[in-house]
Image 1 (cartoon, rainbow, N blue to C red):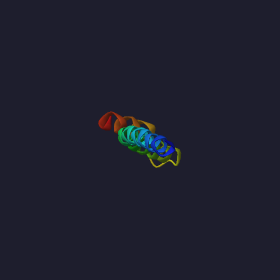
Image 2 (tube, rainbow, N blue to C red):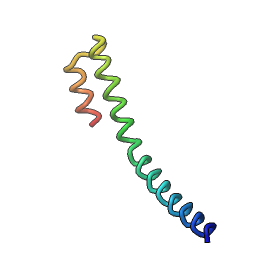
Image 3 (cartoon, rainbow, N blue to C red):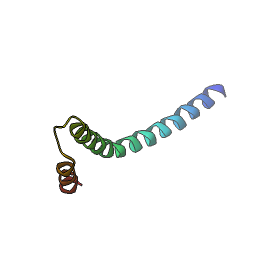
Image 4 (cartoon, rainbow, N blue to C red):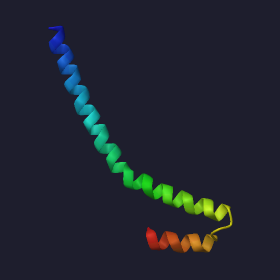
Length: 62
């Protein structure tokens, strides 16, 4: 009885982990875009890129 319960819990957890993995994979492109934008904003802060240039880059890429 205990073994059956443990197996059932394991299978339920496996399904949840699979769902979480799918959700995380769906977030990868979004996180990638946020990283790109952050890099450009940091370049503006360093004076390597102007805000108008950032605006053009954003318009062209998003």
